[in-house]
Structure formats: C-alpha cells, structure tokens
Length: 128
Image (cartoon, rainbow, N blue to C red; front, side, top):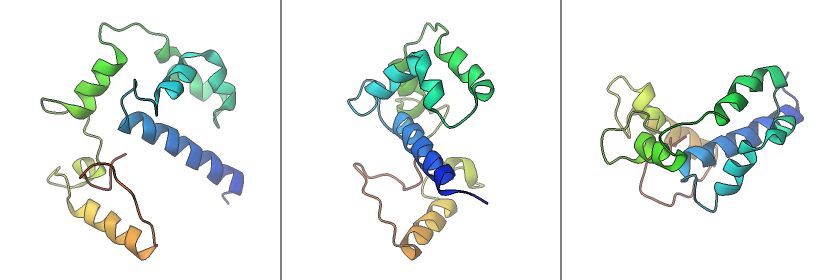
C-alpha cells in the first residue's frame, strides 16, 4: 500500500522533474533546481537510495560540448524536429501526434476529477 509520505515524495519528484522539462535551465523557476543538482548534497534529500541515484549524480558531473541551455533548446523547443518531444501524446499515440487520443483521454480524466490546469501557453495538457 502507498503511504502518504510516498505520495508526497512522488508529488515533489514529479514537480521538480516537470519544472526541469518545462522551463529553460536558466529561468528563475529552474535555475535554483539546476544549481542544487550540480551539488552533491541533493541526493540525501531525494526519495531514492544512494545506489539508485549514483548514475544520475555522475551524469551531472560529466562535461559536454553542448551547454545545458543549448541541449534543452535542441531537445524540447527546436527550431528543428525535436529529438525528445515533451508531450505524452507524441510517445503514446499510434500516430505520434500532439493533441491525440491520449491527450483527449487525459483531458476527460482531468475534467471528471475536477482538475484544472493553468497553462502559460497554448499547448496540450500532457506536457511532462
């Protein structure tokens, strides 16, 4: 059975990861998160054991020719075809389209459960 603490951990994890996918790494929303992830002490606060986090933590220390903001722009924004589109429907729908059947199903589920999502842009609700 899932405990309230596990639900809280899951909710915090989802919010952190969601923000990192949604906002530029240089934005005021995520810059503090990015900075925290570059330090080693974040692992003690994350709801997974150190062994599971070790590969992720190591990747934060690797050097890349592409900066984090450049990679975020290329992967999630464009201007060209996105290698990693940040919408569930692109990955879940047979046709790999935005606003597909899975988006409509999510929209219906949200409506049935009284969940309202305030979006800053005109985009599907299934942005992760």
